[in-house]
Image (tube, rainbow, N blue to C red; front, side, top):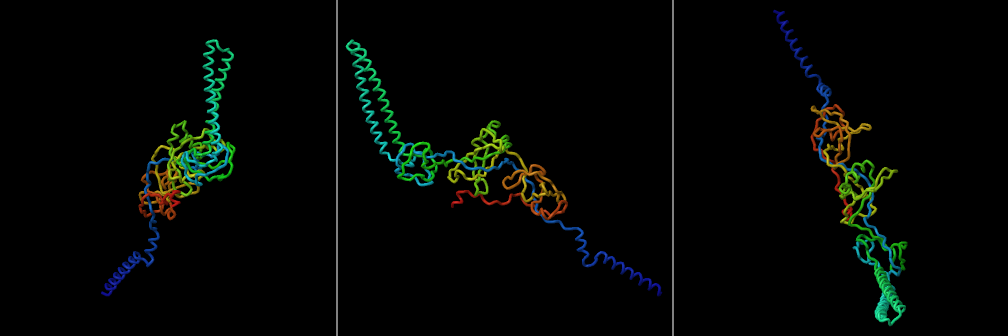
Length: 398
C-alpha cells in the first residue's frame, strides 16, 4: 500500500516537473522574447514611388550674351553748334524722333543762296533758249552766219547745264539743312548724351558719337554650341529647319526659363580651336526688360519628342563613378540597379538605361538601407522637388 502511494507521488512529481520545464522552455526568462526578436530584424520604413514615363524633348544647355538687333552710333552729318537735346538719358524713342538740333541758320542761308542761284540759272537758260530759236530762224533764211548760230547753240547748252547744277546745289543745301535735325533711324532706347548744348560738333564717320541707340522690341542671344549638337540638331543644310529649333532663355536672376524663342541664324564656319560654332537665337522683348550685354542661360531643344522614364533626384545614389537606384522586388527587398542618367526635365532626371516604367524605387530613405534589406514601403507619387517660382526681371523691379 505504501509502495503504491509512493509510486503515485513520484508520477505526480514527475508530471509537475515536466510541465514546469516545458513552460520554462516556452516562456524563457524575461529577456527571451527580445533575443528572439533581435534574431529577425524589423523592416526599415522607406518611401517608394513608381518610375514614370513621359514624352519629352531633349534640351541642351548653354550660356551666352544678349545682343541688340539694331545698334546705331548717332553721329552728325553736318558740322555746327549743338543747340538742343530732345531726349532724356535712357528713354525709349520712336523712329524719326528728333534727338539733337544743330544751329540751322548757316544752312538756311545756304538754301536761300542756292535758291537765288537757281533763279538766275533759269533766267539764263530761258534767254539762251529764246536766242537759239531766233538763230535757227535766221539760219534758215541765210541771215546769220553758221558760226554765230553755233555760239548761240553752245550758250543754250551751257545755260541748261548750269540750271541742272543750280538745282543740285539747292537740293544739297536743303539736305544739309535737314541734317541739322538729327533723328532716330530706328526705334529703341537711347544712351546718355555724350555732347551737351553749346558744343561745336564735326561731321563724318570719325567724329565722336553724340549718343548710341539700340532696338528693344526684339533681342538676340548669341551662344556657342558644340560640334555634335550642331550636326545633330542645328545644321540648317542638313535638316532645313534652323528657324524652327526652339530655344528657351533665362536671366541670371531667374530660376527657370521665362522666354521662348527660336534659332535665327547659324555662323558659316566652325571655330577649329574650340570646336564650337556661334548660334544666334531671337526673343521677343515686349516688356523691355532685356538689355544688350546681359548674361543669358539658353536651353536648346533639338530632338523630336520621345518617350522617356524619369525619376526623382533623391532616388539616385553614388557608387564611385557609378549611379544606382534601389528597386523593390515582389517581397519588398531592396535590389541594387545601376542606371545611366540623362538630362533634367521639369525637375525630374531622365534615365537613359537601367529602369523601366512602373518599377518601384526608393525615393526617401536610401541612406538607411542596403541592397538585400527588407523594407516597409510607403508609396508616394514621383514628383519633382518643389522649386521656387520663376522670377522675371520685371518682377524684381516691383
